[in-house]
Image (cartoon, rainbow, N blue to C red):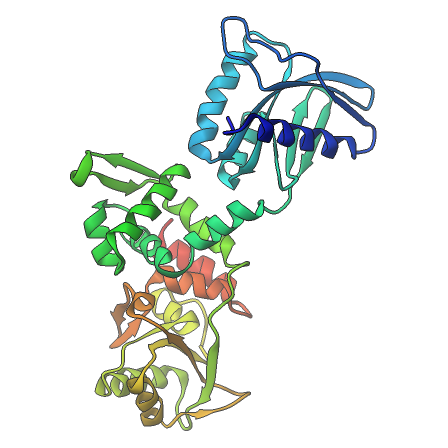
Length: 357
């Protein structure tokens, strides 16, 4: 339950006020809490009347609910359901998308402080889907950005393996503290399984598809990295890849080709690619590499786009294909989802043919 009884009451009252605003709905807080025979006490009971039908809602209040918490709530509600003929409802300050999916699958009602609501009952169905409350939205957004995203990237690349914190941190180029924090968050989402204890504890990503789906969804609220447009004269896109590989290597420039040009090498889909986009590690070598290519800045008609990387962490898990460094298939997939034209079709093709989950 919530830490403070006042918070419970405020959240339950907020639910009642919200549902009263719906047409044809009347709701009031019951006078006495409901007790399950031989079991724990509910946090509240609500008398509800919708379109002439009357119900009693048995309400359980929580703070933040993730899939792991939802699983516990489902077990608890099943025990309640054996003893009470009523509609069960979970209210919480925030409920993760995965937890909402689980509750809907079991036809358990829920309400969060952002105004999202699901209420299934005999002859009545209420469903309101709103953005996550700001605290959880910030938490989820931070998980898919910066150094934390490097940990997710590593877990997706090595989704078949068991990894300890130290090994994960080394491969993701982050501190052990950052790796540990990310793992704890992912356990709350129920995407990991663990084995061992203490320093020998290892985790395995059992839901790589769910993690990648969640990351893709977050792209809508994470600003994309800006890129600079260039034109390299007298060269076609496929020839430009070879030229980039040779020139950048000669200048000691760290880079990774992404978007359509990389996807086409991983899993051919288009008949031709008109532009090469790549990330390059910013610094003196980056400017020298662009000059050595003979590239000139343009506003239109670019055949080269440069995305500036602030650290090597943004170039993690690149692969060498046809002589060029390509961003990892995971990174290329995420980049394509933000691109234009047929890029999203290409992303789906890459995920099916190369990523595999």
